[in-house]
Image (cartoon, rainbow, N blue to C red):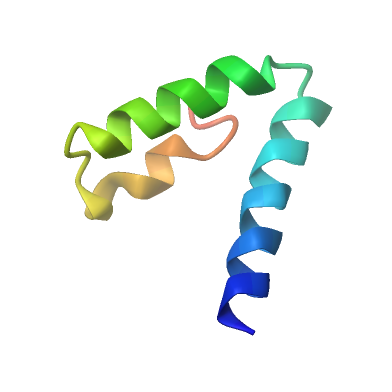
Length: 53
């Protein structure tokens, strides 16, 4: 069940970005790069669509 919740959260982020008319691929590459580079979990909210990072 936890996997389904995580997938739903990821889908929500992607679709939110799409609704805002922003490039989903660029967003995912940016987020994955930042997370892989040691982005602090305390700042993960800044990666949400529309957060301006």
